[in-house]
Length: 121
Image (cartoon, rainbow, N blue to C red; front, side):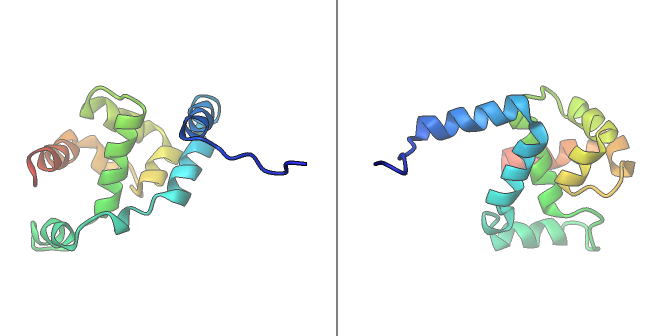
């Protein structure tokens, strides 16, 4: 009697794809539970992000990275569209780490961050 079945990478991908299509809040919970961004961000990047303005940042670095990942996962074509979605979706905004929609009214904040990631910040 076989109690367990070994899953292949294809099975895991299919399960994630099904959750993404059918239950987006559950998909976001899986991301939050299994991806710890802090472990992937080099300390030099943290330092440079925090020292760039010379003052304490209102929103954490991880909020911008989550927003970038959300944009790529959901195939959101432009930064401006991403900001509109985040502005009107409180659960998605809170998932990313933006406490309110004030910073999302100025699209240059997010766009500058994305350009910085693209060219090496």
